[in-house]
Every structure is written in structure tokens, then in C-alpha cells.
Image 1 (cartoon, one colour):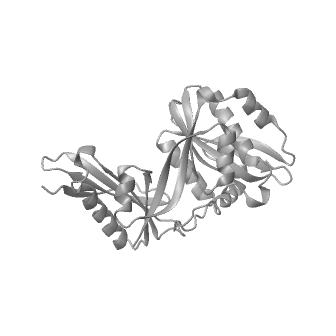
Image 2 (tube, one colour):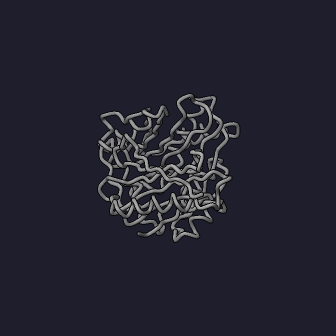
Image 3 (cartoon, rainbow, N blue to C red):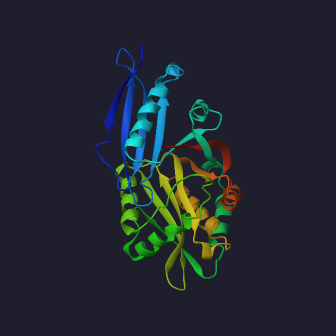
Amino acid sequence: MSPRITPLTDPEPGPSSRRLAWLASDEDGEPVGSAFLRLFTRAGQEHLAELELAVHRAQRRTGVGTRLLDAALAAARSEGRRAVLAQARQGSPADLFLAARDFRPVLSLTYARLSTADADPEALDALVDRPHPGYRLTAWDGTVPAELARTYADSRRAMDDMPMEDTDYGTVVWDVERVVAAAEAVARRGDLLHTVAAVDTADGRVVGFSELVVPGDGLGDGQHYGTAVLPEHRGRGLARWMKAASIRRALERHPGLGGLLTDTADGNAPMLAVNDALGYVPTHRSVEYQHDL
């Protein structure tokens, strides 16, 4: 019997996107799969949607995934989107599913983890305490302090040239409002956002940042959200400096953490080198797929 697909709507749109959802159920009404379509709403990304699709292991290869995918793609077309992104672990059933349905690979990512048990406090101290003439580090929890908000928002353009290969990702425009909204979204779900930033001592402007999100109870694994340096300040070791400070701060404040997770585009050789130098161990690779509508 064909699964029943029930459309749903996320009742609380975010500051930069809203979501549609579908639930697949069998003849007994038991859930067997789901799909979520994130519709980006900020200027520069109104063409884009992002898909998450899951099917119960016992229901795979029965048409559930295809029905959910058809519903999501139809919605994306009706919303005027030209591209739908989806990510899958390399070699997984999802990887094979997307490749067989006109999704093309556009980006490869390496995921890595630093076990807190393997972190070397003395080595971190040496990295963090090493002088970087013309720069200083600062750090905050949650929302950026008002006196740094403008230059911190401006520093987000450091992500503009991040290697995205063939992904039609559009342009992400950051302002103070968006920076504040992003921090508030992390807080609403009960997580803790920690940011370390590099500041140019000549003018007090933020020139780079490293963000880390930790579960609210301080347990499990933290997740690096981004580390970047403005182009005109690269080549001075600031990325490794900030990320090392972020690690040290996490270890001091959250002794119950098991590890720290990071993901990096395979084309981003400098950041892969930073992760390797800090002791991150690759765990798996994922593929970003794109479906052109």
C-alpha cells in the first residue's frame, strides 16, 4: 500500500528561513519517514532551498523516499526556487538515493573530531599565549557585545570566499540584526554559543572569529560553527590562534565535554591544515548534492 504523505508547516519561521515538512505514514498510521524543506528568505538566497529526508530502515526501497522527495521538490518549484541542496554521508543509502535522482555532487566535506581526552593543555597554552603583533584576542558568550557588533558583523564577509565548488549558494549578507538573531536562535534551543575573535589593535576592529556551540548541559560534543579571517589579515596564523583559544576555553569551562566536532570543505586546504595541527581526527566524509529546478 502506498504511504500517506501529510504536509506540515513549521509554526515558527526563523530570521533567515522558514520550513515546510511532510510526514509519511503506513496503512496503520505509523510514521515511516519525513522530509523537511528549508526555504531561505534573506536577500541573496531567495533562490535556494535545503532538504533533509529520512526513511525508516525497514521502509527503504518501498517508494517512501521517492514520494517524500516528489512532494518537497514540487513545493520548492511552487516557491520559485531554482536549486535544492541536500547532504549525505559518503557511501550511505542517502548518498546512493540522491545520486540516482538527478542530484549532482557539488561539494565534498571532511568531518573531524577532537577528543577532549586527547587534547594537550600545554600545547594549547603555547599556541594561545604566543604573541601575534598587531592583534589581540577577545571572547564572549551568546550575543556579541554592543561595542564589537558592527565590526563583528562586517568580519563575516571572511566567509564569502569559502570554497563552495559548484554549489549555487548565493550571497549571505550579514548585518548586526542577523548576527544577533543567530545568537538568539542558539540560545532558544538551549545551547551555548561561545565566540573567540581576533581584533586589530590599530583600530579595534574584529578581523576574524571562531564560533563554538556547546550543548546546554555541557555534555556530549560541541560543534564548531565557523572559523574565518578577513582576506587582508590572512597568513599570520590567526585562524589557528583563535581555534586553539576556543578549544582551551571549552575545556576549562565544560570539563564534561567528550569532544569537539568540525567540518571543512575539501577545497579549504588552509583550514584542513589548522584542524590537523590541532589534533582533529577525520571521522567521515559527506557529499553536498544540488538539484536544479
